[in-house]
Length: 252
Image (cartoon, rainbow, N blue to C red; front, side, top):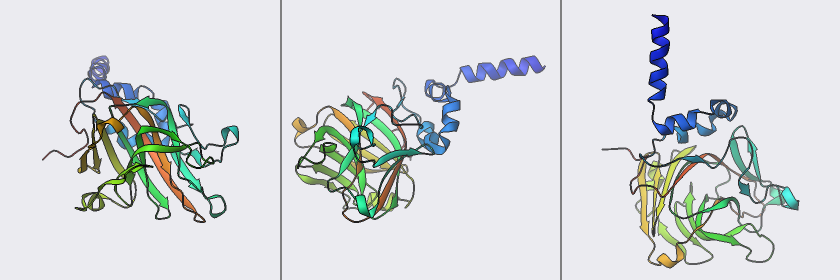
């Protein structure tokens, strides 16, 4: 009987979804990363999509920016399975800067959690753009689209048209839990959708699709002179060329 139960357990695990298997294969790393992958890893991506971890929970492999390497300011670090963007009053950045993926992306689904730990300045996820050095002092700034959170919810055209989508109906503000917000960004063609804690809060098409091009994904560390601030990110799981449907929105 004992051998039969073991065999049934093995069959059950083998029959699990491809996503569950792929994300549980490195349980050792997941445990080491603490809570970093908890919610993002639980999201069921549509069949045919291959979810990939952008963040390994341990270090910033695959990313570049102000990490202290090469003499850059050390604004981005990893602590307890979380990417932390922080500055003190004395070293606040003069220009918003970004932790950037070394790989570029065009059409994708990204699930992650974000938290404003200190200060009221917003952060966001940058996409469809490129590194930008507006005044010659910050090579890790960004020109492109920015999905903003958790204050000033909306979509911004960085160094361009500014606010192109605002949370006028208050959907994002209502969904905001004030702590770790669970978010999904679906970026396909000229369309960006954002879900917050299971609710679709933004659905916007860019009237200038020529501005929607391949680019690195960036985690924003906003400029905020003379103010200590901290933003935290965890999860960060992505699939390319996704299906045209939200994965985390609660079904009615």
